[in-house]
Image 1 (tube, helix red, strand yellow):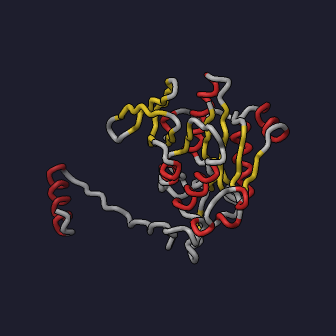
Image 2 (tube, helix red, strand yellow):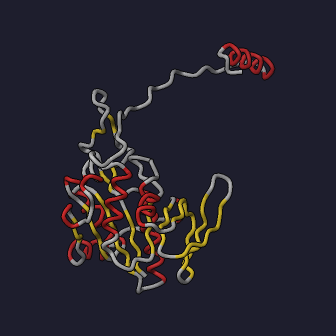
Image 3 (cartoon, helix red, strand yellow):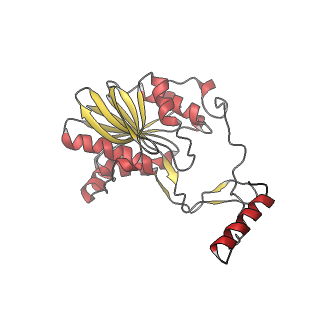
Amino acid sequence: MKIIVCIKQVPDTTEVKLDPKTGRLIRDGVPSIINPDDKNSLEAALQIKDNDPDTRVIVVSMGPPQADIALREALAMGADEAILISGREFGGSDTWATSYIIASAIKKIPDYDLILCGRQAIDGDTAQVGPQIAEQLGIPQVTYAQKIEVNGDTIIVQRQYEDFYQNIEVKMPCLITAIKELNEPRYMTPGGIADAYSVKNVTVWGFADVPVDPEKIGLKGSPTNVYRTFSPEAKGMGRILDGSDRNTVKELLSELDNKHLL
């Protein structure tokens, strides 16, 4: 079995700040991490490999050269191969262009059975790239997977909804997006870290290596763009109502009525 896992290196959003003048992210000094949902998808692939030693896990990421660090971490966790799609020509791509580039790269990997992605990235929160990759490849997809079971040439997925779940059986090859409830990602091991830097390699595919139409990538090929990024203004201090329950409810209803909220 051959599994492709798509991961993204993202800034740790707990450390992110915005430049008040430009509205852009201040990335200096902000640590980068593997997108959390992508780690869940990687763990799912590694668990399948644990039960089937013949399974190979290939990790694919699109990003700048420093994304090599995230791919090395994935190798240290147990992935077999890593591919970095990197080039200035890809810069500025929105989700549609990104999914087109990644899907074009995946087409170069023969005979894959399963593609795993995280539900969404914490820096964009669109949840679009995974499903768009499936559409670009023309394969079935199941999103929001909280449980995965391999059954021959099919995958049984438990798909999460707000107040219930749905069991879906899908034939491979297919694409599945993972949520945090799917599993608990493992840690790197000392031996895994050593192998990731001394035995295993990260293959880099540039613009010339990926069969894409230059008119469909980067800013030029992106139908959407980010107009403005900003932090919401802090709300004023709320008002606490004191007194008996009857008087408090009466005062609350009066305030809501005055604000035309009733």
